[in-house]
Amino acid sequence: MVDLSEIAKSMVDMDIAKTEELTKAALSANIPAEEILNKGLVAAMQVIGEQFEKGEIFLPELLMSGEAAKAALRLLRPSLLKQEGVRRHANKVAIGTVQGDVHDIGKNIVIMMLETNGWDVTDLGVDVAPEAFCTAVKENDFQILGLSALLTSTMPNQERTIAALKASGLRDKVKVAIGGATVSQRYAEQIGADCYATDASDAVKKFKALVQ
Amino acid sequence: MKTLTGADRIFMALELQEPDRVPHFELTLDRKVREAILPGASYDEAVEYFDWDAVVTDEEDQPGYRVETLDASGKYFRDQWGTIKQDMGDVNAYPIEPAIKSEKDLDTWRPPDPDESWRYEELARLVKKYKGQRAIAVLFPDPFRVANEVRGATNHFMDFVRNPDFIDRLSGLIRGYYLRYIRNCIEAGAEIIFIQGDYATTRWPMVSRQHLAKHVIPVFKTLVDEAKSRGAYTAKHTDGNIMPIIDLILDTGIHGLHPIDPLGGMDLGKVKEEYGHRVCLIGNVDCAYVLTWGTLQEVREDVKRCVRQAAWGGGFICMSSNSIHSAVKPENYVEMVKAIHEHGKYPISI
Image 1 (spheres, each protein chain N blue to C red):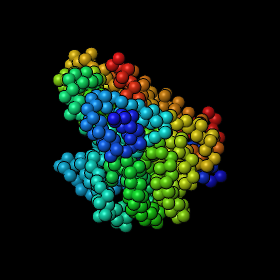
Image 2: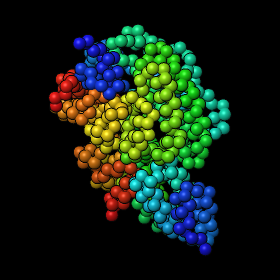
Image 3: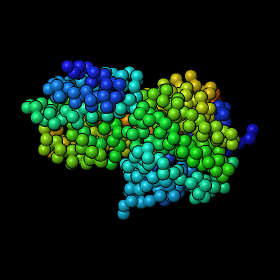
């Protein structure tokens, strides 16, 4: 019998090979993929997220655990997609770095944490124009749109994207979250964003609250 | 009493003394901002207009730093370390493809040649024109930042856990280049060795204190030691919340620390109280919000705040909290300089 808490432990321990091995074993033992995701990966990410928030671990450890999570997710994804209703009911978010900005490591860490917490995440990439964000929102059923900007000079494109959503009649279709080194709660309120996240673990908490 | 030059002021501040007024300069003044204030002006004309107490030559701005242009627009290029970068038209170009993708690549990867003479032409020009009047600073990236770009940020960070020997090998090669570069700069007349590269995000240091102490600080310290042994001053720029590691940085013996980042929650007054006896503080007029969106009055108040918090007893150079980047309102930078001159005279009376 595979103890799913061992998968969580191997992720927290940043042991990519062991995480893969245990995930394979769990799937072979016919444990549903969603159960492995929730009791293994999501449980691990809660611990990892808390450790990161408290300053007990840093970017190297977070990224290594993230690699372990990605390895497990690669194995789980085919089964998750087959499981009726699982992906349809997963919370959906799209995230991109705004126009004029190509910084992506922060965005990628947020994506990793969200995926490991069971979110269905679409990565819109970097240097994304407001119109492209609008198209993505129009053609999909995202609950949250995340806008990342690292520079003061590209922050205005977060505001422009919100304005573009309004002009296209799409603003009420999606909650808008912003993040980035120079962004703040004050700025989020100023431009009419629904949420500001300070970092990846904060994003997980705040996005969960946004969709409840 | 002798009239102090800008260079005198800067050196006195770096030696934790009080000059006649708080010195100031900027590491970077965006061209668009400069053009808006002084249409058609050169760097030198801006220096003289603002009466900067120091001049700066940035290694990454030298023509040979971009080794190869990769597209017709000139937006994509390969830098001297082999990293492919995208020029976003702002302060720094952003790395988009690393030079070293595996440990095997390091077997054949070589740092650039620090003895190429073009590297020192702009420095020589500034020394000839300003030595003795304005302090001469050379700005270049920290080996930690170079390694992060050369290796790719995600892989570089993960190497701290999975392959720290690789970190040390790569840093060692980069350090070797900069030891020679520092020597050459000082021989050409550089007086301040200013090393820039972030060690922290707005929340925390990027890597643990243990990793920093073992793999990053020792490399940085050898550069500081090299510069000091040759008679130069040293300064470090890092954004973010460095409070958990500030002692490690200061223990390297740097003369100055920039910017005491307000975005990282750093408090200039508290840092001055706790560490002002051992380092010159450089900063921290807010360039994320105040200089970008603030009113002239808000800019003036922020300069007064900096002077009030950090100028007492000397050991303070007033500067923006990062750079005068492209989103800074030109009139706000003009106001900032005026305010420094009006409120920064010693004895401070704010």
